[in-house]
Structures are given as structure tokens and as C-alpha cells.
Image 1: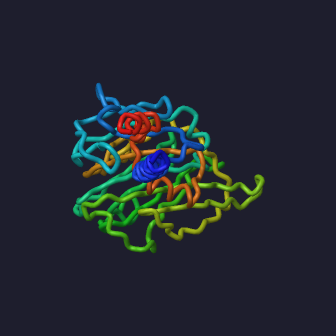
Image 2: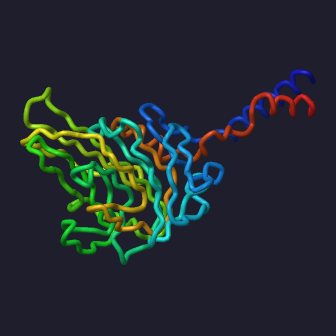
Length: 292
């Protein structure tokens, strides 16, 4: 009888802990800043950076709504956005970096900016636009098209860069459903010799999008940007534009390109930051002892 009870306890333990299996937590190696937009991390017009020291400044009146993980911020497309600060000396390492977020939008009528990082001379260092095509002076609407920007100051004092997105597989990201985006840069300087390689890695909903690399015939200077990264709006010649209409959640910035396996890990994670899984051993064992 005693052996039977022990067998029942062990069987119950196995069943209980199996039921508490959770997706892996997010990747933290190289993580610079992380804004969950959970209600507990929003207050006094600030979005807490739960990993670093770069709390975002909330502008307009974006509201906290149910998100992909926990809560999220909903932007009205008119005047809502978040300043994510300059992230300290992060801009000096802009050549190796990753932006990641979940977002949801149904807007097919307007061009929108998911995020933009600015430098003091070129107005744009790094960013993603949605529903745009063409140059900044000649914009035409192309619903669902991503433009991935990388721009920097060159040695001659001018600005160099590119906006890429045409030719990518069509992904309907304006369908009102949650989508996951990862955009990484890896500027390889070939030991200081020309040409440079600009490697761009893009993952949409956990799937790699073939981007390849471009070669630069001139060395660039990745200088620290003096203005903050903007989330939910772009900025050109001092003017805010292309306000995002929709919901944004789980924004993370890394100081390195994250790997395909790490993208999968983050994509599959559903664990709210700082929330411990239920079913701790001490709690479960206590209940079993009282039961038996």
C-alpha cells in the first residue's frame, strides 16, 4: 500500500510539472533595452525599460490594451508616439544591432513608421516604414510593403544609405492580426579595407526573409545620434510624420544581430517579463503532503 501511494505521488508530480511546461523565456544576451508596455510598467507618461535604464517618454495618449504578451500600447495614428531615448552610447554600435517587436494594424490608407533612429546630420540612421514606397520626396502607397532603412554619414561629409523592401515576399501585415518583426544589421568592415558589406537580416512572423548584402564603395561613419529613437512615428527635417495606427508590444533592442534560433525563441516565448511560472516545487509538494 505504501509503495502504491508513493507511485501515485510520483505519477501526480510528473503530470503536474508536465502541465506547467512553458515556452522559453526571451534571449537576454546583448539585450540593451526592453519595453513590455505592460500596465505595471506604464505610468506618469513613461514606459519603463525593464532591462536597461532607458525609460521611454509617452507622447499623445496611447492606451494600454491586451497585447501579444501581457498588455500593449495602442497608437491612434494622429499624435501618439514614444521617445525611446538615445540609449546611451548605443548609436556608436549601430552597425551591429537588432530591433524586434510585435505589432498589429488594420491601416491600409496611410504610410506609417514603426520606428526610426536618427543621427544629427542625415535625419535617419535606422528604421522601418510600412505601406510606403519610393523616395521620401516622392512617396506612393504600397499596402503592406516594408521599407528597411540604413543611413549614415560618409567620409566626404555627405549621407549614404539605402531603403530596401521591394522584391520581398508579400506578407499581409495590415490584416489586423499580430505580426512579429526582427530587423538586424551587421556592417562588416573587412578589416578596414573597402568595400564594406552591409548585411541585413529580416524575420517576419519567425520566418527568415532573404535579403542578402550590399557593398559600399566608401567608408561610412556611424556617429552617435543626438535625438532619441522614435517608436510609432518618423522624423524628417525636424518634422514628425507617418504616425503609426495600431498596437505595439514587446519592443526590444540588441547590440548585435540575433541568430535564427534566437529569433525562434523570442517568437515562441509567451512569458511576461518578471512573472514566475506557476507550480513551484515547494507549493506543489506542500499540497501533495497535505493530500496524502
